[in-house]
Length: 303
Image (cartoon, rainbow, N blue to C red; front, side, top):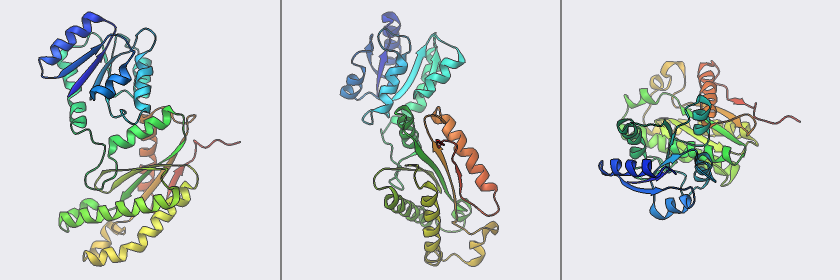
């Protein structure tokens, strides 16, 4: 696990390198913002500890460059800065930072914040192994990239209903097969609508997310729902799901909850605000009696 320390304070960065190497981290130090991107690529850096205020190029700008570059955008970024205003912290996360620590930073606190990033980058994979789709971090990074490039997109949330109940009813391998069947169907329908211009993620159990063009988003979700419903009788039969099981909690088992958010540079300022807005829309979707597809179009420019 390689860590890159970027700080124009020579003494601070040297001491930090010594302290982290005692904890078995391999560290590289740069005392200026030049050559950071090249170093990350050449040395296969996993995590960067990044000062904010540096001559010629700020840590915020460096973070933006990292998050836009798909070759290295999975690099963990922790800002280390003397600036502690809430606005600065919020701005740091909006640029794609994974964490923001205010100097002086205790080693124990830094190590505790490093741990989750080390875990998520251990295999340097952004793929969900069960479905072959992206994982949650992949979707977050792709959304961050679009926001930094000021590109609009459709941000969708998709859920298969009743998965927890189904896991207690049929073998786990069967449940996994059903989830994989839906993942394949989701990818097929998305490709038919958008060609290669989309990203899909599986974030656990029956929960999926997608990033697509904004055009025809509603039509796409309606077609996904309708085409999946046509497959359900065969799936019920293949896995011997009785009518009593299918009517679980008065809703069809393996039904879909679908909602979408139009993200534009003018309506969404950060990945967190996008996730928060989509979650609110998803909760509204779950509360509906008729399971209607919901789309928040506030990000659409009206001329």
